[in-house]
Image 1: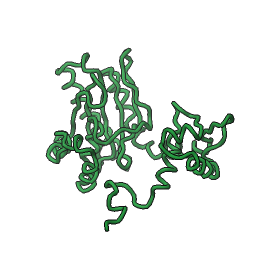
Image 2: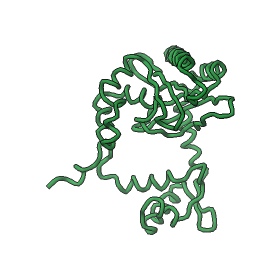
Image 3: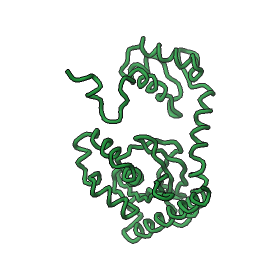
Image 4: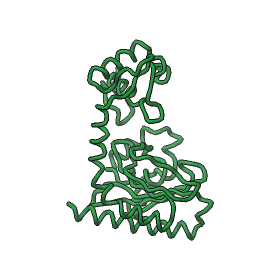
Length: 258
């Protein structure tokens, strides 16, 4: 008989379901929804109320969650230290990219951002938004899937082949057969040093991205996301060249700090 862990999707830690559920409770608390009740968490996560009460009790025990009154719970100030740790870890990349982000935004007046990979997610490290009325908003720390959009695809392409294959293998078949995710396509992204996407993340949005590298290691990606209607083929080619150049500038800045 096969082990229960044998059916786990690739990349999931065996024997960690309880910890996974605990973290899913904690990650429900966001800036958009900072207060939760136990019944609300139970309904949203598909858990029993007794199970959620137990996880809330554990989170209160370590000081990450506390009562907000009226049966609601909130994240405590102790979580600020976690946010600070994340910010500190991303600081070298954000600092090296700051001048380039501003320069590009001023030149093309579209949203530009820097992201890095964390496990099987992509996280925004910093961004400068377009000054135009219609623009995209990416908050620092915002998580994105690793297989959708140009910024993510640059980071997916840079992963070690075995890890990249493991990630793709656990995707829904209708997703992993996407032509952008074939080994040849991802190898081409690595070879060309850039990729673009059309309406993969949001309708009407085009994106382009290039890797930020020090030596052979890809530390992040620089990208632009903009409405297609105001960026024709000529403008997109210009932005692409500027993004590739900007990523190279950030790479040199990071290399000089090592």
